[in-house]
Length: 267
Image 1 (cartoon, helix red, strand yellow):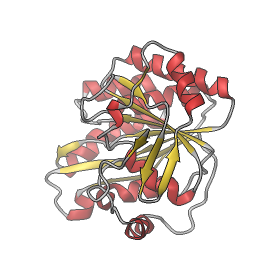
Image 2: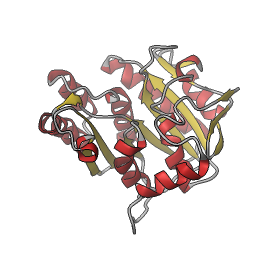
Image 3: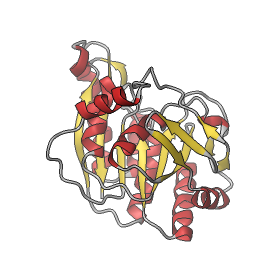
Image 4: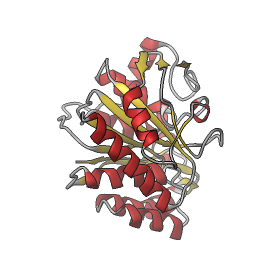
């Protein structure tokens, strides 16, 4: 099964050389790389969120398997959907799914389903791949797409991932894809997002879930970030840091109606 790009030519250039040039614009000079457990990165058009994404990806080492966890914007497919086999194509080449790990995760919990339908038109994971491919040519992926879930189900997803990773016994990177506040003023977004970011800095998964709900923060990938934090804490994480926060207003100058982006590292 081949998953072809859904948003090439929209969120990022469809031409290989143009895409590489676009990514280069968002890569800071002299960033020092280190091995990490998880990251938070945005998934908007590269011209808007590429600065936050590039700031993160330029600072991390990419292992042989990357678990991608993103929100389901389309409403298609199962509520927690894992694509378990096949290839994802981007203008930079093809990436194979780590079928062994994907199937192990699905087998570990009835909350998690093998389902490719949810991934067909979803952009939240696809937009991560060019940045990953820029820094490493060959690696495998496990794509996980989530609709909004209760916290207890997020915990079940995290336990399934942990069990699957333990079963295959190899290094993984956890990528949680999320934009932050949507369609508010720059000042309002910054104020609200600080509350969520503070919880991520404390690696407080349940606190993040409750903070986003209580303060009506339109953080589309809160569940993926919650799952990543739950996993990271069990995998020995001790630190979390904000690498870059920005809004679309920083790019286009319109501070009245922005979407916000955070790039974060958990290690």
